[in-house]
Each structure stands twice: as C-alpha cells, then as structure tokens.
Length: 316
View 1 (cartoon, rainbow, N blue to C red):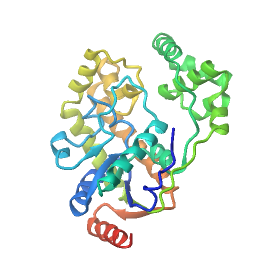
View 2 (cartoon, rainbow, N blue to C red):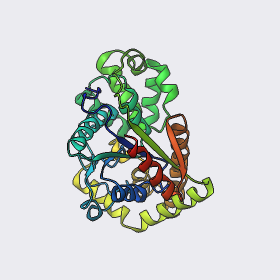
View 3 (cartoon, helix red, strand yellow):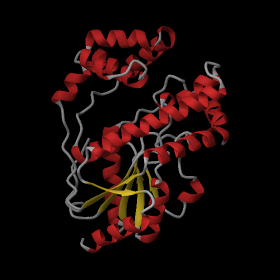
View 4 (cartoon, one colour):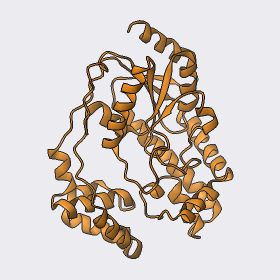
C-alpha cells in the first residue's frame, strides 16, 4: 500500500466526521455538503459491498445523486477488502476531490479504517485463495470452535485476542499462518506502513446520552427488519454468496442468517440484533475516545458544528 500523501495533498483541507452507529452522521454529513463544497468518502467496512444495503444502513441511491459519494458499492460480497486497501483507495479519492477544488468529507464508524489512513498499518500478508477456501469448508463442517482451538496452538496471542465467534478474523489468522508459517501476531509486530501526512485535517465526533442512542439503535434494528432485510439476505443467498463469507458474518447479516435457518425466532432476532448493535456502538465510542484530535459535539448541535467547520475553513 502506498500510504503517503502526495505534495499537493499536504496543507489542503480534509474533514472527518465520526461517531457510533445511529448517532446521526449521515444527516449531518448532508448538511455539511450543503453548507460547504464537500464530496463524501465513506469510512465504513460494510458499505463497500454491493447488494448489501438495508443491513449496512446505506444512504438511498436517490439521495446520493446530488452529492458525490465514494467507496460505496465498490466490491462484491465475496471479494476481500481490508483497511490497507481502504487507505490506498481513500488517498486516491482525497487527491481526486482536491483536484476538483472540493473538500473531502470522510464519514463513518469504522475506526480501524481511519487509523490505517492516518497512522499507517502493518503490511498484511497476501491472501491465499486455496487455503482460505479450505478453511471456509472446514468451518462449515467442523465449526468455528475447532478452528479457534487450532489457532491457539499456532498463534496463541491472536487466539487470545480474537473471540471464538469471530469467524472472519479466525479465518484470516489461520490463513496467514498456513500461508507464511509466521503467526499473524508476529506480522503485526514487525511490519508497518507509513502514515499519511495531513497537516490540515479537522475531525468532528458526534456523541449523545447512551440511553437516547440505544433507543435509536433499538428502533433502527426494528425498522431494518420490517423494511425488507430478510428479503435482502435471501437474495444474497440465492445469488450464491456463502453464509461463511466475512461480509455475511457481520452484524445484522449473521443475525438474519440465524433466523432464516431457524436457529432463532423473530423475537430473538430483534432482541439479539439490537443488543449486539448496542455493544458495537459502545466499542466504537471506546475506540474513538482514544483519538485526542477529535472535537466532540452532541448530535443536536448542528449549528455549532457548522460554525466550527466554517471557522476552520476560513483559517486555511
């Protein structure tokens, strides 16, 4: 990955809007685009996938037509996409937007992707499709716990860090070890890529009272299920996308799969989806709170955000 900014990028404004799921980033990003000359770059590890719209809470395509959006619907659900690729794609999008004399507005909730862009990332070992396919077949027949046990034997540090139900990360760690003979944890310690050098980046964070946020998450989960989410997942299965794919094991999609195969009732689906989304929002808060460059605003302070951005741009 080439993760250094070109000279024409340095000093040009880059605006970032972050926060947990359901906090109101989409609505505010559209307001920012109306007030300033912005183009949106999605910082979301799921919105890159085509055909996955309801479960990823994508902004409707009709609303995207008036404002350029980047890094949405760029890969199929069975394609590999990671933080390193995002950083490369994002840097190119930022360069292109600057060339159009517009402001890149990066918005989303995937903290790892943003960190990969700003701080650099270890060089991931290349994927091995044959080993990945073998592991995916094994996980379908033997279960994820069996593979987690094997990971513990060959890469104890990764196994201790990765939850037993985190299928995609278990697969990746085993794939790296079987492909290279070196544990993923060692790759992460020894290999790094340089950070991007943005000297004029403003990062805005949105926050709210937890009770209010969690209630919106509950309502969004219910609305998603009532809005055709089951049909979306069934279409993905009919196309031929495996339930074991990383994209299909994400929050929402793995929950709907459990309902479709009869493992959960509809009430269990609704309750578990809302619960796990709330937990994800809590992890997002924890991740973003570590970034001391973030200027935080409550979600109902749109005018203060607009004023802060305007003052920042006036000083550039």
